[in-house]
Image (cartoon, rainbow, N blue to C red; front, side):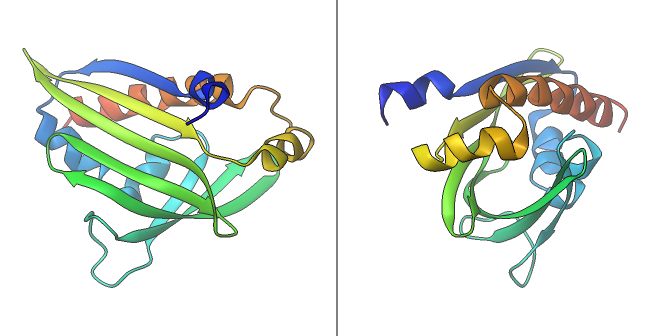
Length: 158
């Protein structure tokens, strides 16, 4: 990874008063991602069986204001109670990696949501006028804070 890409990596961490296994069950059920993400409207499994296992694919339908787009995601890590991760592609181009790392803690767990920008340079430049987001890392940081807050509410009320 190049140094300028490392600068765009984002990690947001939050304590959640629920067992790591319960939180993992929520984040790995991608069909529920639209319940807590401010940008993901919905996800659906593409592959038969529709479960969180390495290599499984799902489609994400995303929205930001009037903009709508779909991505294809491939699960890269599925370790119950510990880690759920996936790579996102658009038009067959890898654009990002996302992960949820869970660590058991007193009273629940700590969840770290991470995002790594993998967009090619030309796509990064083109996305500014198309998406209207000058700083994608900061935009995603704010979205991740919203996501983890909503995830915490869901996990702590079940």
